[in-house]
Amino acid sequence: MSLTSTLDRHFALSERGTSIRTEVLAGATTFLTMAYIILVNPSILGLAGMPVAGVAAATCFAAGFASILMGTIANTPLALAPGMGLNAYFSFTVVQSMHVPWPVALGCVFVSGAIFLILTLAGIRQMIVAAIPAHLFAAVAAGIGLFIGLIGLKNGGLVVNSPATGLALGNLHESGPILAIVGLVLVVALHVWRVNAAILIAIATTTVLAWIVGAVSFDVKPYSIAAMTETVGKLDLGGVFGFGGKAGLGIFEILFVFLFVDLFDNLGTLMAVTRRAGLIEPAGNIPGLNRMLVADSLATMVGAVAGTSTVTSYVESASGVEVGGRTGLTAIVTGVLFLAAMFVAPYAQLVPSAATAPALILVGALMMVPLADVEWTDPEAAIPAFLTLVGIPFTFSIANGLALGIAAHALIKLVRGKTTQKDWLLLALAGLFIARFVWLTGAA
Image 1: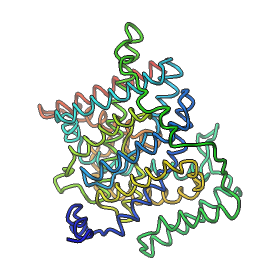
Image 2: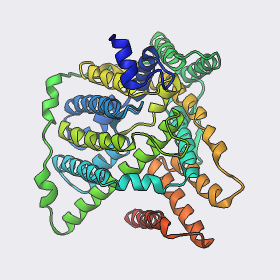
Image 3: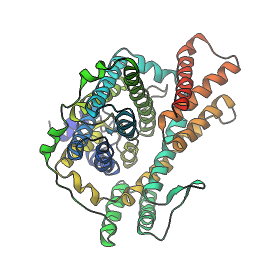
Image 4: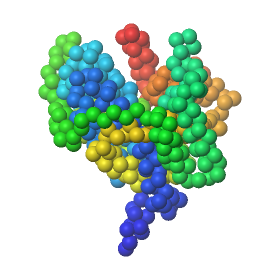
């Protein structure tokens, strides 16, 4: 039996209407849109006193291992890497504000992953997915599309922060925004012409243009694979359980935040990407959900041992899906490229954010399709869906958007007297979300 037929049978390539070539292109595209984490994660965790070179190697290893694991056991085009937001919480809040040593913080990440695994094996995470109504699935997918689009607009310099209005149009005379516009025109044209490698071609072309006009900032710092030993195995599990009194409550809060944000960021991303890939069954079930959640839990634990913050599913996986990725082979290709990047991590700067921004904008636009499934004339569906839709990009958090939507959905059902005994988990989640918002407001 040939390698092609073996891969076809194992990953169900023909069944899902894809091919090895398409999956490889999709995996490479996902990697390029995620590659920024190789530089960003070390810079953020470095502020916590962690060795930057060690974190760079750990980031590549964790992303590579997690993506390959996801593709192998769950056969889904979902790539993983250390999550943005959680790495900032790790560095700025846990280590700098709460004065928790970074080895202990890594221990908290590991413990949160272990708890995730227990919740998954007990079926609790799957119950949470089942409790979320279909119209929120659609709103999450579209909200993540807006989120991805906003990230692309900001990365390309087309949208900038404004003290007066929050956001404003960027300076279109600068090289970054000009390159992003050129890349956007190119990727849209290629997509309209139905070129499968549209996103990859646009990223490569825009990168070359950036080199030509000198818009790439490139400053390689000393780096060695051996640097990974500076963080690997340095987590302090004893320290996690050794805090008492007020410090102990602080550790409990850290574990709760790691658990909560990772859970709902993952659920939102998982729902959006699998929906876009056409992998959700007509009844709304996600095939292989349990395996996906197990892979995610193990990835976080391995990432903590390697020396990085929580590993989570990436919304940028949708870029590979747009290229045609439909199976775990896409995630495996992405993972292999991350492992290869361990040897050349600093060279990721050769691909500027202006080159990947158009891909994110296009993917964001294409993810608006599920909104057609929301019954906008029914306030019970429309209001929670709207809050989810705008909550994700406006708060820069998938978890916040989903929390707003679920809380609103439960409250409306209560007001209309439509709750039943089957809604106990939905009501419990809503109560937890409301308590969380009160907690966050009080903490602020």
